[in-house]
Length: 96
Image 1 (cartoon, rainbow, N blue to C red):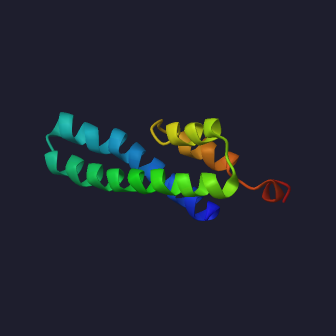
Image 2: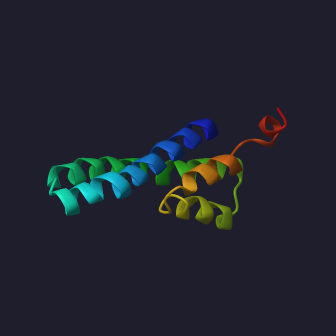
């Protein structure tokens, strides 16, 4: 479940980056209103999935509440998904 959550974290983080760096400028500078709705809805569904699965993974991995909050806040900070992914790598994989 942790490996699925890591992948979901990266996809959700990339959707946030696309939303902020592509869709928002497209809406406000170029008038493409439709792009923001589609990407915004996709990002919203991904974020809800991220939130629910983070609760499950936090229970399975015995995360502290503070670490779970760090994981949750990393979902709303652009590019934080890449740092979080590094934190979530199991310690036996770091040695390889």
